[in-house]
Image 1: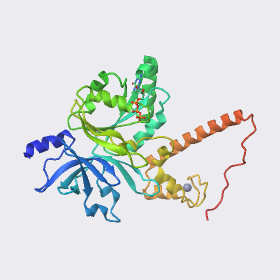
Image 2: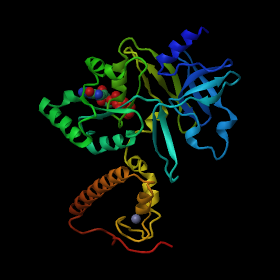
Image 3: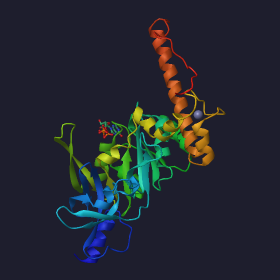
Image 4: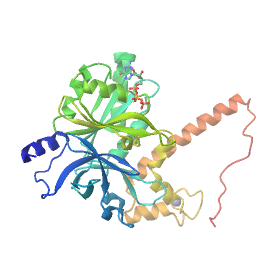
Length: 352
Ligand SMILES: Nc1nc2c(ncn2[C@@H]2O[C@H](COP(=O)(O)OP(=O)(O)OP(=O)(O)O)[C@@H](O)[C@H]2O)c(=O)[nH]1
Ligand SMILES: [Zn+2]
């Protein structure tokens, strides 16, 4: 293939490099990661590939392995093999549950992360802030979208926008949108310029599919469909992995990205590293203040835990406790002030 044609195609799916790999290798973008391999896109076709042996070595830092969003060098064969990962311009990651300092890469080379929340019962500024905590430091820019604005009065919309700004700061763009309105595609076009890569995250029912369809418009160019398996290994739905938008940007929409969804327990998984640390404090009910043997304070002292992350975590924990207290009060009322069935409370005890 003509070199400039190959480069143009790669630019279209977000490549920013300037040199193609040596003969015998070509570039493609990872759009899906399965247990059994990868799905890559070269700007024209979707194809399957396997990682070269190097990436399977035990003890290799998981961050070195190809991830969704990566531009990789591929050697043809049956199947094609990924032999190298190009430098990343951004890395969205979260602490992997259970592993103390390991990070799980969610996606790379993303320019904008749209954090979508509906202005209905879904509206939750605390959740928005937790998404932003995850995006912070990734190299990608967050854009907060408040959907379903048509269900609210202009005054209510203004208050919601203000509430979110107060929470996340004035620097983060916040837009109230109607995901069904074609004008929304124009509003968001500045974040979806040619060569830009975006992902859309938000809880179920927030309007992600609706917005995706609006962004695609009638010139829909869904390139690359990926079939997903259900729990029993059967193919169920067909998803579009990499969407080239009329505005010139692309939207990555893959199973890997949906992992970013924050619902219930997943919110805490974001802080799995801190919870793992806290589990190592000498006292099971350590307040992580001036207690002796506090693993959290030790990690802060060593610079292994940033004060910023710690602050985010405390905020989340306080909110959870507040919610639990509200729930408890309600249950008590419903039970007719009978009190909890089982006695409970903190017991200060040394771990064994
Ligand atoms: N009125 C109004 N309805 C909306 C808007 N955005 C989405 N909806 C509706 O909200 C419902 C959920 O929207 P979806 O686009 O399916 O939500 P989703 O985020 O893709 O949900 P999952 O697929 O479960 O992750 C649908 O009935 C949409 O029509 C909006 O801006 N205004
Ligand atoms: Zn502690």
